[in-house]
Length: 403
Ligand SMILES: *Cc1c(COP(=O)(O)O)cnc(C)c1O
Image (cartoon, rainbow, N blue to C red; front, side):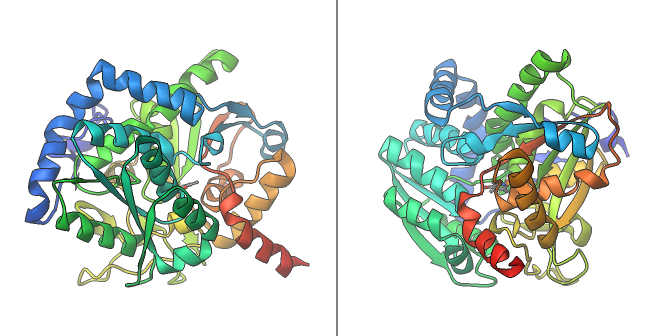
């Protein structure tokens, strides 16, 4: 098993975009030249000092970085370990997604693109994309599942207010997977003028690596911030929820090659991993190709994608990025899951004990803390990927049911 030895550099896929057996670019011929251009140019562009300066200035003055690393005192006392929260919920637009869209919009400008398309689940990536398009005066079309348009109404309104066109995806489960299919189809129709801003570490190479690099600012800041308060940049654990895996990739990135740091990825178990209503991809999936790359996919024996379920639109996806598939297979990452019910419970609990209303996606990451057998000396960073404003309708329903 030479792929899994200690020397593996998880931060760098192969030339063709593989992490172990996962990754690559499985795309229709119409997209070859587009993806090839991106593949040959993204590292060069991202390495250019002028590009870096432009991205860094926007991250600071527009997004509001660095986001704080907050010591959660009451939560720490309850769990019995030192727990720090990386506050991505405080980013402009309310989640980590904008770290990536800021980078990609400037990259799209460098590539001479005139129009942006994107897919979205919870609407956070759609809002982050519509936001940077407004900022840069670019046309923006966002594909979103019909079911998600209903359950994330505030984000749909925000995208429209920001000048984006929101196109409903009406096939399949009418959620993120279907929106992604529609976005890829639209891209095939006008590949030359359009840049597709994928919102997670999924899709054909170079997207998973490119998005991970844009999100890696999260763990770059964590190292400096943790060192300032504890004297060491290294926590014992980093915990993040995983839909496609971008906030997790960003939170793990600068710890991937630090073997003492345990990386905990939390998937959505829906009604329960084996209930038939779940999105716990690593527990239920097998190697397959979805949305342009080889990864772990929830599928039937003959390769039909299984419809996922999660209460949180952002985790309601039958795949994970190839980096995460490799972290799972090589055991560098520990994959856990949380049910809809546990996530809801933790959304309320975190609100009550820390005064922070998290996104439903994010609440999944907190739900596993009691199951981690933590010690008082453990130092845990939880990636607080987003805030809960978009989920208030779901939270209000839950309160009605309780009362
Ligand atoms: C989109 C989203 C997620 C899931 O996406 P990843 O790519 O797995 O990070 C998690 N949390 C929030 C708040 C989101 O908006």
